[in-house]
Image 1: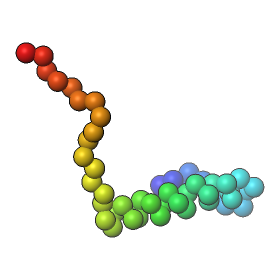
Image 2 (image 1 turned 30 degrees about the vertical axis):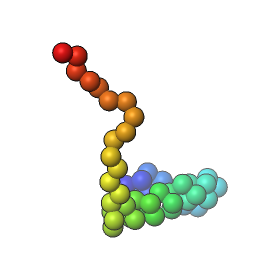
Image 3 (image 1 turned 120 degrees about the vertical axis):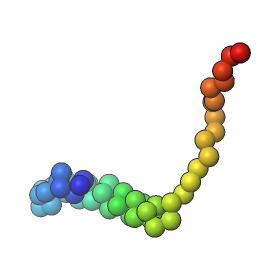
Image 4 (image 1 turned 60 degrees about the vertical axis):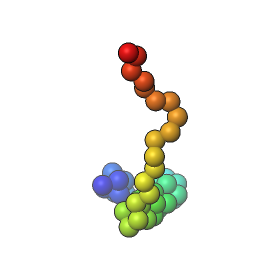
Length: 49
C-alpha cells in the first residue's frame, strides 16, 4: 500500500523514499514470519477501592 502512494520512482526524492520504504518492508516481512510478542510494562492503571 505504501508503494502505491509513491508511484513515480524516477523523481529525485525517490532515493530518499527508498531509504525509508525498503527497511520498513524488510522489518514487516520479518515480523510476519516470526512475530515478536512483548509484555506490557511501565505505568498501569489501578482501580481505587
